[in-house]
Length: 245
Ligand code: 16G
Image 1 (tube, rainbow, N blue to C red):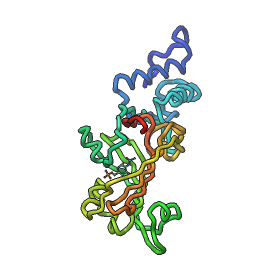
Image 2: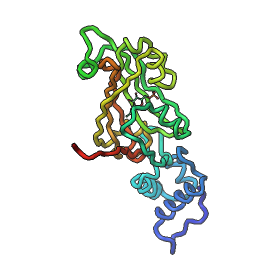
Image 3: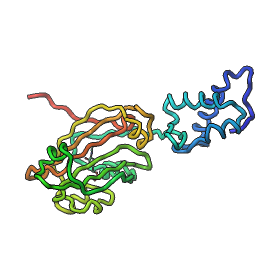
Image 4: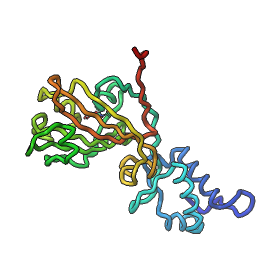
């Protein structure tokens, strides 16, 4: 960003001129998704505009979702995603879903621990007194774009070593002969709290889908209790309906 080209007459308010210039840089690819913008102070020096003007231009791009502001670390170009259509009737893993689409996967681990279960985990997993669980929390990404935050609770009988999960939880369960064969899933709406929005690189308060999956083994025991937050701008869930009997 330089001083050149801002004009006091004719081209509209200065903040709009700057806003247009930032938007052009995003369209042309000079500012790519995930790139950070210079600090407000530096932008003021570069452009000769006041910090108030800079802030106004940035705020309106933040409000329209084109820029993301993170406390303490600055302003970034938002990552746009193509929407993914996901069948609701198939019991697949995130890794399989993405592989089928020819997309890469990786995870940002938030935590991976053996812990004493919370009351809701004891209920969901049907555990006995003193049982411990593996709790895995990660941000699931595909082609570098964060799509979901997942918190999985697994009985230690099915996953004695949480470190055994390299990429796919279901692969690790499969290796122990403990992959779920049936699951019940619940989806509800949620506005993303600031911390979750930050992890998913969307504006705070953006629409999300809270998904809870309880996965069962052939003998009916619960092997997985997973709570996820999916980006609302990234997923369409689709299911085929049949006439009620
Ligand atoms: C999906 C499942 C999640 C499961 C994970 C395993 C939903 C809402 N969630 O993300 O319950 O734990 O797949 O994926 O579909 P992985 O084998 O790639 O770790």
